[in-house]
Image (cartoon, rainbow, N blue to C red; front, side, top):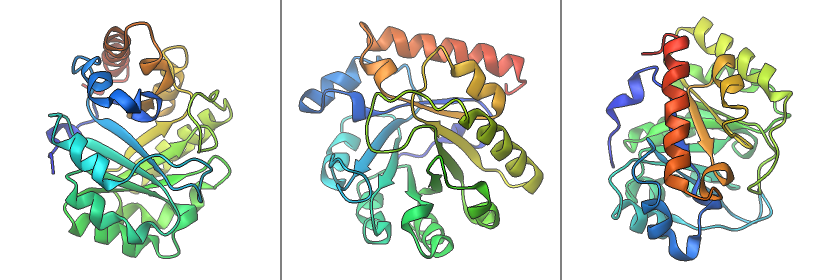
Length: 235
């Protein structure tokens, strides 16, 4: 597993999603980012929890061997309990599963941590924050979906900004060091809104990989993030 020393800081982290990359030429798609990112986000879809099927732990293992950055795996799957070990053994840094797909999330969070990975829970837009309030002691990341999961290139749901703000308050009030990640329709046009609302990890797929120059776009994302970090006193 690639460790990540910046996890414990409040610096905002950029996590480009390979869902929008050219999966037939993934090595070159990732190389085009020119290291202008913090973690690489891998959306694992099973065709059941969400309509599409993407890839599994073997591809993630191969990817891990080709890049120096940590891998952030988002399991959009039914029965995530059956898959976390294979992804941990593939060398990922963080593993996130959906609250809607797990009957025993606290147990699964502890298992992910025992496997040496950061553990996270994701919520669909309509799932209330109350569903994870009592899991905060056992988690390292809360991932809020800002679109309904299953497809890349969707438009950001503006009502999720209030949910991000509420999640930030819930985490801060708890006193636990939990990262707040957002995923879905994030571009430089709405980046400031989600960071000011309280997010400190940003997943962006199509806005980066569909740009004329993905490396320059990722660099611009990071430049905007550093400026907002200074404004929000996260440095």
